[in-house]
Length: 487
Ligand code: NAP
Ligand code: MG
Image 1 (cartoon, rainbow, N blue to C red):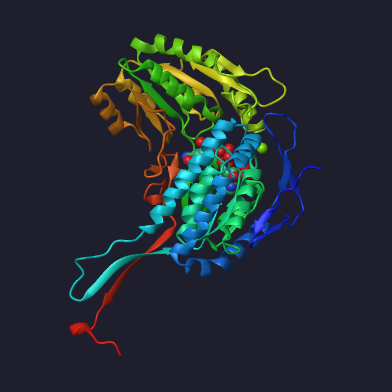
Image 2 (tube, rainbow, N blue to C red):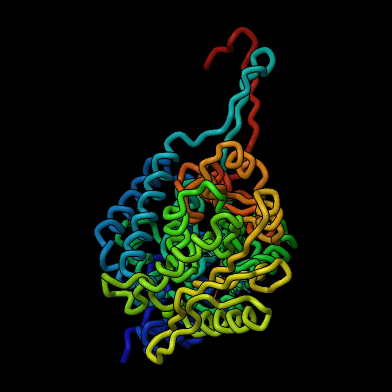
């Protein structure tokens, strides 16, 4: 019998109230069962919120240095578990072992950044306050925060939300994606090792559709930090608006890469491979549209197709694999349907498609050419290793096409023309703009979030990564005339 993963509530491991579980499949082996996780419902979420609400009073008054010590021990435990956790992420998500190691490293980098940032996290003071009034802005934690994460970065996204929430004095109820419960439960174990007080961090697995409403609608939950699809983000926003629950929504994308005539084509192709097919095209910041000017279109495509042909698709745990399977059956079916729709819509398949492989949920690196603005492949997020390549007249048309999207998460341009690059930086409608760098590049000092339907609320990372989790209070203190005297 496979191992059963438990919920972590009030510092203890427990089964769901219903006693039901669901299977966690390895996407490299159809029908396999890695382990089973609790199919929690509203009752379990209610218990976790209760634990978090009870823990809040003490945790919110715990000195910052003590909160930092807990997070620091968590990060040490994470660093020690790097290889074990990377293996878990690859097994349940399908990304290659090197990509999983990269995910753990990214979480460590961001976590250490937030830890340091917290030492200097303070509000403004008001030098212009009149007379003997001293005035400053003070931050207060919100209370219980709900963290809902996707399966594509199962541990990194959770850390990017949870650690700032805890550092600023909030308590957390974490609900991971159902494709990736193992890494979530493993992380809960690291929190236990780090020795945080019971109830400060709670983890409840189960279908979002079964328990999401309880987490979002419960009045004790003061904020939801969500990463996932625009469709679910919109539902959450509607529900949260009802009682003014604060939201941070990191949503979908249809990120464009523009290649101009003077670009370093080899570098542009490498960036396309990295951001188009990294994690099987399942980054929210994946490059999914490529806009080429005519002068380099053929040369770029020749190089791109040669690189695709050289990519090894297969077992994610094999160090030489370039691309693993997509995350699970629904992902596979959705991507296969989008590929079929692109063909029907008139785009030309230049490489790839669904792999003839019965063992796992494999899609080959896939390239469509001749894509026009009217085609579904131009506008709809596929979230898989599928590139839509179009030829545009010039930079004007490239920018118009790039911005013709409901999304605005990330973007990239390859050019050595400074004026063209700066115009792109000014005009691109996206939360991230990259010049001669792939669309997934990021650093924790800068905000990570999207424009338009790619995001809502204060973005993660940057300054706002901590600010999202606090209320502000303006404090005015009038001293006694002539300085007063203590009694
Ligand atoms: P998803 O279907 O929206 O699911 C995301 C999370 O929401 C999962 O934990 C899911 O649980 C949960 N959920 C589903 N329905 C819910 C409901 N009614 N109420 C509350 N929670 C609910 O997205 P996904 O397939 O996991 O991830 C892919 C999407 O995430 C893509 O659109 C991608 O672009 C986006 N993404 C964005 C960013 C960013 O930073 N902007 C980063 C990564 C991914 P279940 O798994 O149980 O359904
Ligand atoms: Mg899985």
